[in-house]
Image 1 (spheres, one colour):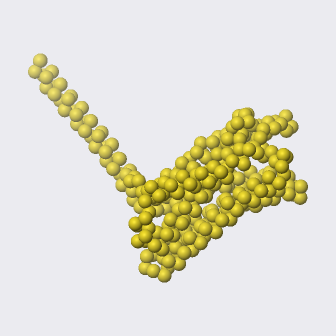
Image 2 (cartoon, helix red, strand yellow; image 1 turned 180 degrees about the horizontal axis):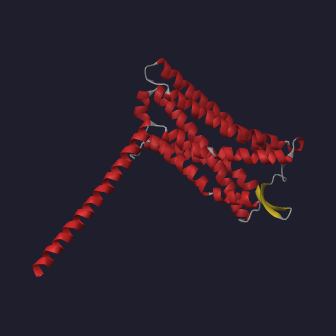
Image 3 (cartoon, one colour; image 1 turned 45 degrees about the horizontal axis):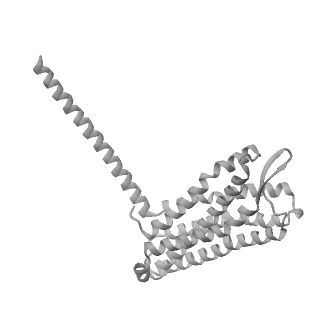
Length: 278
């Protein structure tokens, strides 16, 4: 595809999700064996990658929402000022912020031993107040503020589309509703259980552990839903994908036909020479 502002957003989002998925085998193996065998560095690094994906993808979704809102509200300004260079700067800034918010996961992640098993866990024993600060900052920066910005942006877009003749169908409304609902459903339960863990002595520890595992997986599923909702549901993407696949098939079939033609012509010429020799 031709490089544009939109493809810059989607490429960065795809890289974030791909890096996260590349480290999933470590977490899958840990969940299956219930024993961490990859050492202290990978314990810290895999956790850091998870939160890096969390913050980078969320920040990028906010950027995409704001960009769409600006494009709808100020189309002329957006056409003149939305450049690939500026988009790249915004993407770099989003990644830097994601790295900053992910650093605590690398600092407090540790390896220990429990019931003859090696575990990879968050070690907040050195400072219990740090656990509260990190949990609240993740809630605010990773859910509350992004969700408010996303819902405001898409509400403005929906109102704009309904009050103008820009929307010829209800499809944009359905897509935007799906975006908001998916973000809310994937991330809210995770942050709720993280906050409950702050007062773990008030709740059943087993319920908290199971809930964190389930809702961490649900939050991770957002990496799968991102491309479905933000890319594949776009009409332009489907048209480009269809034309690209068709052109690739035509080229492949054309090359195969040319190869067969060359083979047949070569065979016939060899048969001609053989009959001459006879």
